[in-house]
Image (cartoon, rainbow, N blue to C red; front, side, top):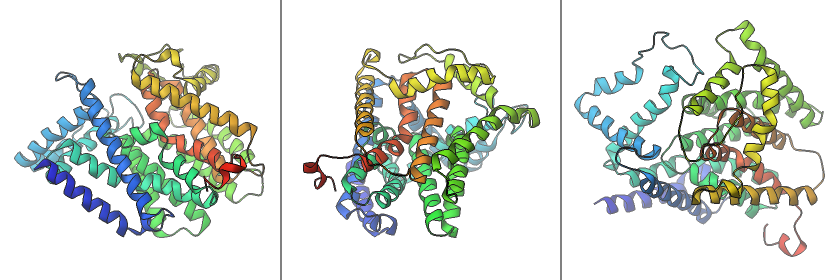
Length: 417
C-alpha cells in the first residue's frame, strides 16, 4: 500500500508541476522542471536512507528524530486536538516570550522544532505517517525556492541557460541539504521566494503578491532560522538603495554594511534586549557544549568589536577553505571537501577569465549577503558538518554568477547556452 501511495502522489505532483504558472513560465521546459523535482525526491530519499544508516534506536539523527516526534504528535492530535494546539503556545520560561533571538531558554528558539513537528503530524494524516511519502511533499512544496533563483539568473544571463540551471539546482550540498525532511528545506524555500519577489518588485512594481510573499518568507525565516533575518535585512536595504543609485553597487553595499556593523555592536546601548554580540557568543557557547565527530577547535568569541575583528579571518577561512582533505573522517566530509575545492578552482578560473563590466546590483547583494552569513556561521559554529549544511543555503548565489560570467573556450560556448 505504501508503494502505491508513493507512486500515486508522485504522479500527482508531476502533473501539478505542469499546471502551476510559476513553474510553467519559469523559462524551464516541462521536462526540466520534472527533472529538478525528481532530483529533489531522489536527494530526499538518500538523505533519509543515510539518516537511517547513522541512527540508533536510542539516538536517531535529526531528520528521523523529527519524524518520530511527528508520529507522537499525530497520536496526540487524535487523542486531544486541543492539547495538540495548546502545547505549541505553552511557555514555561519565567521571562515569558522574551529573548526573541536568543539560542537558549527561549520559547522562540524552541518554536523552530515544535512547529516543524506539528506540521509533520498534520502531513502524516495524508501520508499514513510514511517518511518517504513525506519526502515527496517536501520536494514539491519547496520547489519554488530554487526555481525562483533560476528565474532571476536566467534574466541576468539569458545566453547561459544550462550553466544557470547547474548553478541554481545542481550544487551538490545545496541539492542534498535542502531536499531532506529538515528545517533547511522550508528555509531554502523562503529565502528563494523572498529574493525572487524582491527582485521582481524592483524590476517591475511592488504587486501585492510580492509583498505578501516576502512577509510570509520572513516569518518562515524567523521561525526556523532567525539569525538569517539579521543578515538578510541589511542586504535587502542595500539592494534597494543600490538599485536606485548611480554609484557602483559594491560601494553602496560597503557603506550599508559598515553602518550595519556599527548598529550590530551599538544597538545594545540603546535597546539592551538587542545585544547582538552577546547572542553570537551564547550561540558559540551552545555549540561548544555539543559532542560530534566533526568538531574542530575554534577561538572563543567575546562580545566586543575587537574580538569579532580578531576572529573574522578564522571565521571566513572556515567557510571558504574547510573541510580540507585532512578533515575527512567519513564519506560525507570527503565529498564536502571535494565540493569545496572544486568550487575554489571554479573561482580561480573565474578570476582569470570572466566578462568585464559593471557589477550587477543583484550580484553585489549575493556577494555581501553570502559573505556576511559566512562570517556569522564561522563566528559561532565549530562543527564541520553543520558549517557545510548552513553554507549550502547560499552557494547558488555565489556559484551561478560565476557560471554566468565566466569566459568559456569557443568550442564550449554553444554547448552551455
